Length: 408
Image (cartoon, rainbow, N blue to C red):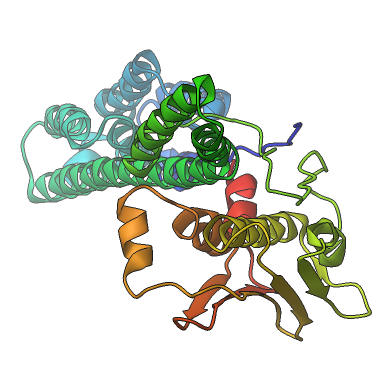
């Protein structure tokens, strides 16, 4: 089966990289604007002009480097911080001493914080502490002494960068936890679907071989005995949750129900009546509306498969000659399919016992399927009066199957 899969990569830190890119551009323009407004006060303006040319070219040329964590390498971070530190240390050469003592800005001004924040986003709070400490030392050297304004600015950058680095580390850990949870959920859904397919196909064939072998006797009885042992082992494996996750085909034999799974995922609604029509036999009666009953392909197939599983249970537990009735109701908000038989009913507590024994006909092949498509299955059984299985599928709710395909 061919499927188009859409891969969605989550990244809680990607918005931070975009914000950092914008910050670097804006603060570079801000630093140049400060210089232009105070050009006459610089003792060596040509030094500042040369530095700002380098700063402008470096900022623009390295925009792709701060687009994501992969592009922001350690070498780039080192060079970027060197540009900032060089600008700080060049400030006494270009600017007047009185302006520096009075608390005038350094040549890179607040652009320096962008270099430190890049360390924080890339490597977390430890990298941020390292970079901000180097900036603090450079500022003290540029001022000649640790003034109040210098200490204030240094502490602000130091605390802010470490805090952002810590937040990034927590966000990454949360992202990994969420990704793992989604993987487990997807693996669980796949395991349950595989368990249904095994129940609908392999386990029922093994059970049939066991029954027929016991009836025929001789060598067939030995074959039936081995089939029974394999059935028990396979049921134990499936119910124990040890079935490996794999991308298996969804084709499975469900009695007379035909599951057309090779249809494209983006097709329009299908008529549920067409999928239920093969269920009709001399012993199974189908009552359906005169108009089509449209459902999403995935939901229609799973609903038809659940009906097939219910009929299999009738044949297995009530008898091959048991009569069953299927009623299809097309309500405004949901499609309701009811399967009723004339058997002796299900004793109280029997379903829980069967699930504990690994018999998943109701738990997975019926309830599990309906749960996966956003529906519900209700069993009503009165001893001596048969069993009624009511399957409800909402028309508007997106199924888990559809969501799973869209997320891949």
